Length: 192
Image 1 (spheres, helix red, strand yellow):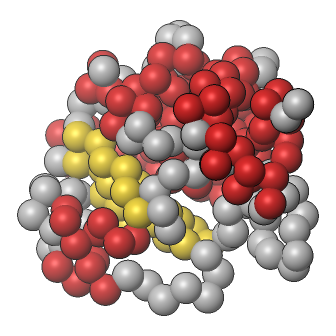
Image 2 (spheres, helix red, strand yellow):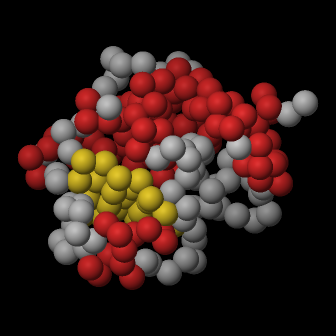
Image 3 (cartoon, one colour):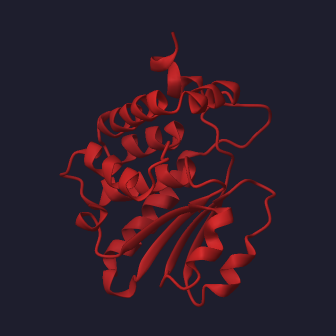
């Protein structure tokens, strides 16, 4: 389904999985790391590739002195995605990763796909990401910025909130994790 959006391969993973993609033909990497986290050593085995590295924490509101994703971060992700679409013959595969491959990376890929096919429902972009990474729980703050920038009038936010509800019902432990980590806005619909 994701191949319906872009003419190149897509991968989402966490830092611990990066070594498994050294031979996967990855030509472009979107790397989202916590501030202060060392650069993953796996990239030394990837061969030549284009990489955008961003650094911010996986939070959606101010939380304990951590660095929030900013609008400028989302603008850089979308610019990276636009550049990929203008030269599709030079793209063998895009790998998007964050610490666990669950939130920041899946938010980034969702917005890249929504941007690539602006006439398609945002829910289809979200479904395509879930098809690649079932444990997708996109960072709501990043999606809110993308929705505004892409002029989706709440459609992208609604698609991600629907994903939070459906996956939260499947994984109540994840709902509690989000509550414990200051991300109540993402799970408000699931709290009794």
